[in-house]
Image (cartoon, rainbow, N blue to C red; front, side, top):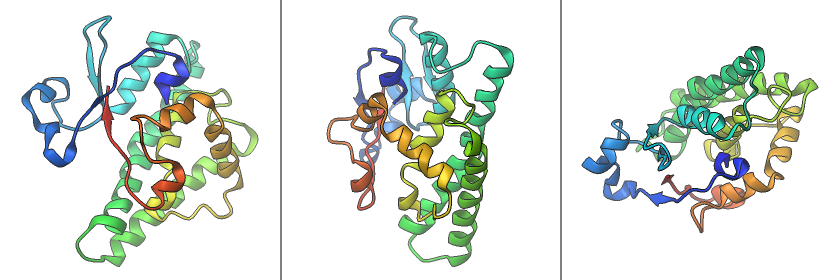
Length: 203
């Protein structure tokens, strides 16, 4: 989504997690943690892993989706960190226990789904008087939307979160976001995600 919104050229290299390609020595040179995504910038030779770091790098490289003033920059960064420290870990655990854990653990499901909902409520309050998380469209919106668009896969309830739902609609209508959601070719749409998993890429 970020690459498309920033109009940066890129090439997608698929990492097959089922075959364990994330543990290949060549990939571990790019991402020592053996996770996705990661990027290699052929202009600079830099390789970067971790989504937040990648988004900051791309924003600085393109000069887009990140304010240049100190207050604006840190407003974006704090909501980016909110996703990385909150939405991602909590919703990720919700998905594990709702969808993939070998046995049902009601306490864990309740814990992670409820905490994800609480974090959604924080976003809903933030969006009460603005179209985007910091007022201006930024990488913080992309980071959070990339998770929240699959709220149903984690069985997180969004009823009553009108501001959040309106923001999700605005995000879903952006052409760059739409194109990004289709990468790699044949990636699952939002509706299809309700029925199955999503594809994984590294660039």
